[in-house]
View (tube, rainbow, N blue to C red):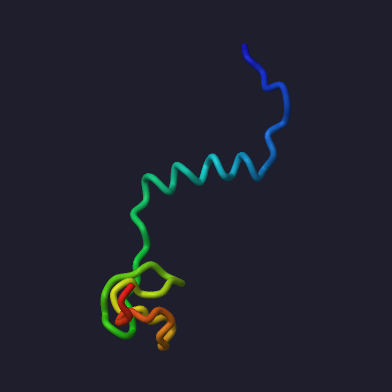
Length: 63
């Protein structure tokens, strides 16, 4: 029977286990308080550029 040559650290083990949850669970979304579009939590809204009630990304400026 195969045995590991070295102990796997808790960090490396947990990173590997987290990948299973990332693939099987759907992403959590919240509604933007400014425009109501679904967005990821703790990130600026991709639609309007607001985060926590204030504009952090100028969506009107041309790139």
